[in-house]
Image 1 (tube, one colour):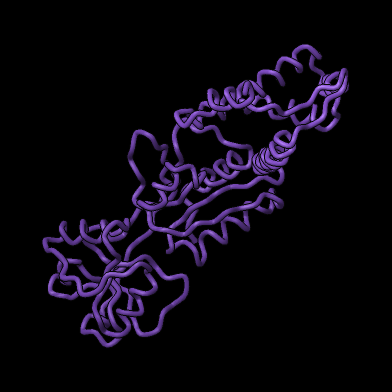
Image 2 (cartoon, rainbow, N blue to C red):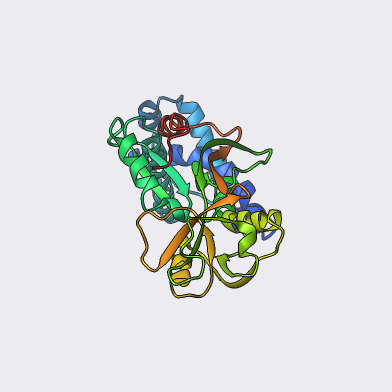
Amino acid sequence: MVHQKRSQDRLSPSSDTEDMTTLLAPRLAHFAGVARTEHVTRAAQEMGVPQSTLSRAMVRLEQDLGVDLFARHGRTVSLTPAGRTFLGSVERALAEIERAAEEVRADADPATGKVAFGFLHTMGAETVPGLLHAFRADHPRIRFSLVQNYGEAMIERLRAGELDLCLTSPVPDAPDLVARRLDEQKLRLVVPADHSLASRKRIRLAEAATEIFVTLEPGYGLRRITDDLCKEAGFKPRIAFEGEEAETLRGLVAAGLGVALLPPPAYPRPGVVELTVTAPRAAREIGVAWLADRPDTPPVAAFKKFLLSRRGSLLP
């Protein structure tokens, strides 16, 4: 009856699971040590804690659980059935904690750690591979977790702790972020090869006011820049198609479905002509951003320093 009453008192439905976890967590390794040796004195010696401290910890653990984990036999102990069930889960939990500790230590290792790095789709074909190749010349074993996405999505992932750094455009301005301008990229008006403007080399954007545009979807930095440049040129673009990648838009332009404001391609694309925009000034800033007040691991600090050293020469 005593055992049943203790269980009902300590493990009532109103018990808070989070509070129980807080109570139990510091004692789990001690419990596993005693269970492994079946001897409190020996376990205390192996773990470097006073025997009295360990004995009290085990009694308190049983009280908190409301279950007898050990049967005492003088100086030795043995696990009860409940103790053996509990030990299996404890060992798995401790192994998972050790695995997690090893993982975060490995990710922070100065020579072999990991950087979670995000970048725009338009920088994936040439710019980012070139950056990683140059960085790894001096840091050959640092690992990268790479994410391609549009700017707002990468900022969200920065804030969620899923990215350490990201290359984005426009350069964000937010109190919880640190952002540094690295370079700028000229934008061109891309028209079909058989378009009436295709014989031109330069154009004022206002001359395209009557054209149908293909653009990136709302939320993309390049879409915002396109809308702003057209507004500055005195018109609102008529949009036929919205996409997620610049090269998809180039394909739509080549198919005669519209014109687009895009950064230079990694490789020449047949079927289109790219015109220099003389007015307004058509360019986008590329910057690197990270979360303010978040300490860097050594590999992240090294890659951040490398990126900042490339100011003005980031783009090929």
